[in-house]
Amino acid sequence: MFTSKKWVLLIVALLGVSLLFMAGCDGKDSDGKDKSDKKENSAKADKSDEKDKSDKVGSDLIGPEWVLTAMADNIEGAEAADLAEGREWLASITFNEDGMYFAQAPVNTVRGPYLLAGDNELVIEDGAMTQMAGIDDEVNNAEHTFIGLLQRVASYKIAGNSLSLYDDAGNLILGFKK
Image (tube, rainbow, N blue to C red):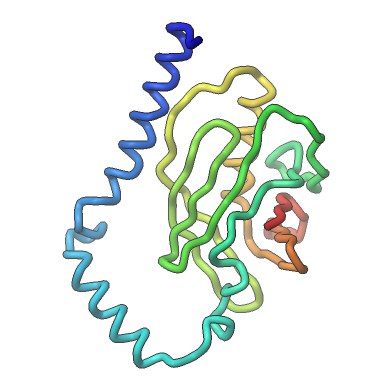
C-alpha cells in the first residue's frame, strides 16, 4: 500500500512528465512558426532524397533504446567503468530521427536536441528535465554524473550492440547496449 509520501512522489512525477510533454505540443517550433509547414517541407525533402537510411550520418545510432552499462564516476574526464550488477537505478537514451533525444536518467527524464556530424561526431545539448528528487545519495550522485557526462559527449562509436560515448579528449565516458 502506498504511504502519503509515495503518493506525493507519484503525483509530482506524473505532473513533471506531463509538463515535459506538453511543452513540445503547442504546434509551434521555437521560432513561433507552425510545425506543419516544417513537416510539409520535410516530407518534400524526404521524397527527393531517395538514399537508404543506412547512408545517413548516425543512422546506426538512431532508433533503439540504449541502456547504460558503463559510466565514468565523475564528470572531470575519468574513464567509464562497468556498472555494478543489482544497482537500484537504471538509465538509458534514445536518439530520434527528428534530432531530439530522450534520456531516462536514474531519477528524471530528459528530452533535448542532439547534433551529428561526419566522423561520428555527436553533441548532446541541454534539454528539458523533470525535477523529481532521488531516494538516496547514491542515486542522486548517479543522476548528477549521468546528466553531466551527456553534456560532455563529443563523439560515439558503435560495435555490434554496444554504443560508446567519448569526451573531446577521447576518454570513454558512457557505455550502452541495445
